[in-house]
Image (cartoon, rainbow, N blue to C red; front, side, top):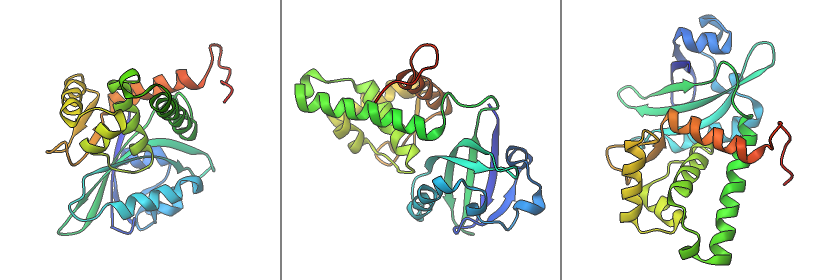
Length: 221
């Protein structure tokens, strides 16, 4: 899976981009350096990108976001974006991952599939109660995936509440998922929980199965 890096100002002005970033966008250094993220972001993702920038306050945990980047020919390429803020000088360091052969589904449909899974979880909790609706692994990975897709940080307490389990139980499951290479945390799991790239790939493959029927037909909502 290709990876790329770029450096930008706090306002999202690109200051440096490596060759992989240029190749992904099919643009030259002269086209990108000094440009705003707004000029290379799919208009449908501008709102979430702006929210992510607002969330990156000094000392904040890294933020992950799914977004689509525009190429000169008008097509877009989806990527997973991890952004970290550094100080002295203030800079945003972005790492991007994408698939050369396309993702299982476009980002909007993956997000929709994750929302469907989350809504089913909520309905089960309401109708059957937490004791009959426990799926800690599923709720942890879907809750984390949705937070990342929406450009939000998610912490241990929120994950525990979402999964309807005690924080100590959530911490044990997080440790197992970390050992399996599915999630990673900041220095303190209370601060931020992220899916690894391998974790994202597994969740998106699962969501593609949720969203589509055998043979490629779409499920009816």
